[in-house]
Image (cartoon, rainbow over all chains, first blue to last red; front, side, top):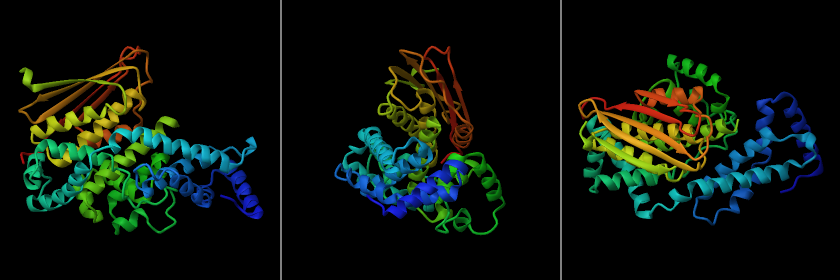
Length: 252
Length: 131
């Protein structure tokens, strides 16, 4: 990917500025300016059985790390540095998920079916269903339910329409837009968010779900109801967010 | 305690195989009548604690998992004890992990061990009302 000379100069200036003041707005611009590179590199890995959108997300996370760690004074072009970091992140993704990605298709399909069963049973029962109840409704064994939930873990990155993870609410997709109103618990949640810059790196919706589950104390099914998405989707988003937070925390 | 109320599993300390620790926890919790919500919480908690003792990386050695049924069959206590060939990373449980675990389980603890590659963790998860 290439830039016009004046664009390149502009980016260089921004990197210098970011190195000085770590301004989140500049950081966001730098990330956005290079999303094309992340997508290009993700495409190079797209024939390995993982959906492209997931790979773009992984690559975007790599890009974010590259922006944070890049030192303009070292004399290396950012694109060179970022390529190395992004490819590293993509390779790590395949290495870490290798076992799970090979989950049989039958289990992946059962997992998707169970998502609907969880929703309908929760509604009918007025509480979260047990595993035997899920098995009975889906007409499979309890072991198959457990196996499918595990297979679903491999999908924690999949079909999630999360943004790049630039950490900015520049698309209007804010915490309050998900919740509306002035929920007093939200204020506390926002306060807790300030404790963790790591959380701020997550896409806004993922931040909201984390707050509601871990700081407000809502259950997964309550969050699903409030946000209008399936409980399994909440579960996957939580698992993915925690994964990313652990990776980020262990590196920092 | 009757033998059938405790399950033991020894897993190589690699991220891929520590999934088995999670699967086993789900299986035991399911037998106890935990709800889907609770099983999902337990799985996330096991992930968090396994990461804390292994640093999320492959370590030479093993993690011995014990799943102990307690209370009136409504409590699952999970112990994980590492036995690494060399001293591993310091068990990592930052403030955020602590808050996450507070929300997921009833009790949790991580121990450094003797600093010679034997960190451990413990969690307790109680089933909510009877389904």
